[in-house]
Length: 265
Image 1 (cartoon, rainbow, N blue to C red):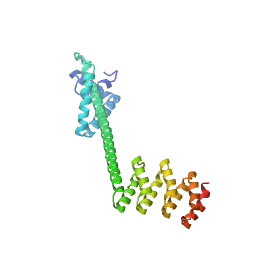
Image 2 (image 1 turned 90 degrees about the vertical axis):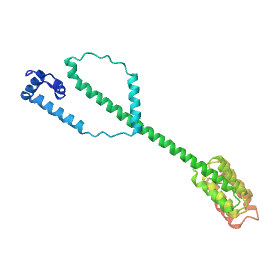
Image 3 (image 1 turned 30 degrees about the vertical axis):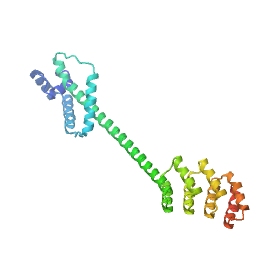
Image 4 (image 1 turned 180 degrees about the vertical axis):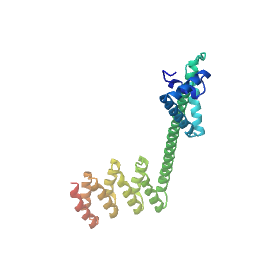
């Protein structure tokens, strides 16, 4: 013992797995060997840190996931054949036990985070579904209000468009219908202003050009003119020139056309 270190025996020494003779020899060696004695103290500090480490308690759901993974791992693992324990096997038992604990901790942590991310994904899916359901309800309410007998209710229905960044075709067509044919001027004007957000659609562009040909209210005419000029819609030039020639066109509407039409010619 004096000629060589006993570092390899220290785990078994601390775990009380050595026979009496070996324990005496290791204890004597530690008194005479500062290097091995230092290793023993470092090992004690490490074990003490393990014992003081707080282990977070996972939720019941995560614990269930962990045991399911552990059971699956047991079934898929290659069977281990038991061998007689020799003195060397007893010495290595402490290290083997520590590795098993470490593997279990890794598996538990993996199960914890796997369950956490799965729970997060489920929450995101549920939130997305709730949003979809809310938008469907909003869309149904919007379409219903736009068919209401009250002009104020129809205006309210049109205003719901603010909640839709990309409305479906049914909503767009309903707004175009209000802009062209609603009996109330304020409803038509509100629908015209609402459709200004969706001029990427060719249907919407064509609807604004049609307004120039059919609408008699000057406020709606000017709103449509400004929108078409802003998007540089060249197909609007001829309808604007036609308005200039009409005696019924209000002077201030003609002034708007005269000042803005050069921007798109």
